[in-house]
Length: 130
Image (tube, rainbow, N blue to C red; front, side):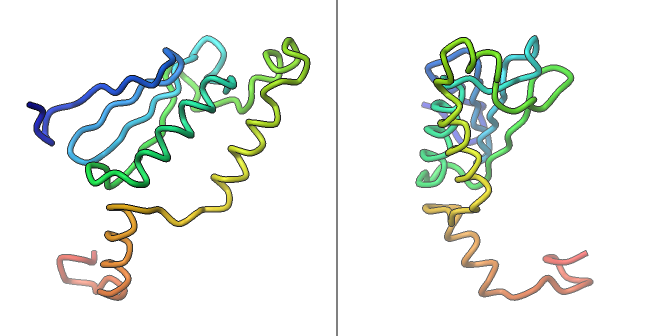
């Protein structure tokens, strides 16, 4: 049985996205360093699926998205999209739009956000402020 302290690898369905959960934090690593982590349709689908699961999971309170290698993310893999006759470009645009919209999270993240809102702003010199 896995406890919350033990890192747990999560199958994303592609080697281009690595997911690990530990201590309530889901770490998503874009894993195409040779292409500066440019997003492919498979990566977009896997990332969207993992973010959806995280939004509703009781085991995830925060998500960190990082990139393998020297770059975080070069954006959509335009070369790959062009090789597919444009396929995948629309998925990248929809994904970016959803992230930019800042949709309200569900599950544990929403409850944590509500609790912070109820407490009010952080107060200097207390445990919830600098």
